[in-house]
Image (cartoon, rainbow, N blue to C red; front, side, top):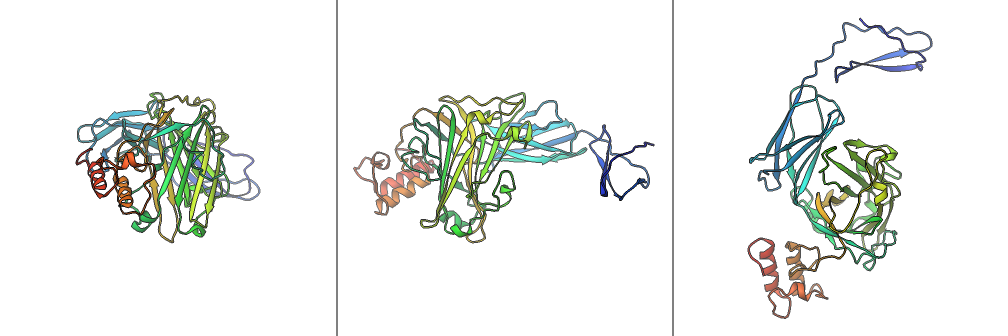
Length: 416
């Protein structure tokens, strides 16, 4: 038997939590305490479960369903002495055995070098096995151009101010989102840097500006629970630091300039020391043209975690995993999310030259370029200064045959 006493307990219903240092389990009892001594008698014995090692296993696949061999899988929790690491087999499978039991949240990451990564947040247990499967989504690699002139952070994405950035087309998942929303909600992000800051921006169409959801007006007060948002996941270490396994930041912004951020360093950190320091974000809603936009400045120095992680060093050639996402949470027109997924962003001094077929200047040749070529050929969109990119057959103009060649290249059926 064990005897205990608690002093200076406030009046009212009080929860008394009993735990055993050798167990992840706890027992909770509610006691009525109203003036004077209160004796708590429990019925029967208090028995704690024996904590047994856990097995965590699963698979890593591409969005196509193909298994991924050679992917790195990490499990990170503060109760582990160090992150658990495994490499997937030919069939995409992995397994961690004899994992220390825990009831706290475990961050799990699967990544494939040069392609992207998927993350899962799972609550552990104290016995048995858990299955955690990953899908590495199609990535949208992009360049982050260096700017010699910082943009004015006023929510207005001025083309001249963002000239050092390539346009980054955010992709919708046709299998998961409302098709009408996908067709009517183009969203484009931008990313630049200088010696001190990372600059991000986003412009998106919004057919129902009055319906934009903005329940959050402060810092860390539930913006993730259903607001229309722009979210940036920043992973400067690309999950390659053996001592901790993953250091990344999640920052969420809405149209009322509310902001929430969280640092994942070994596990999640919500305290002020782990916040993105001195961040500046301003959004604008254009009810006339039915758009909303946002600009963000994130100082590299503000990404340090007190006592835990130094600020990242950025030079030309530095690569980060970055996910940029526009989330819509409306009943009119449907919910949707457009994203880069976790893609490789490369910091460069000057953007690389545009290749033939790249009509939207996103440093890729895909179906969106073919669609632009069709619009140009049909007189629905001006060619402008894009002849070198659009005239892939060197005929002197951009016509339907160019669109067909671009479509074939995007489909992997040929080049030009």
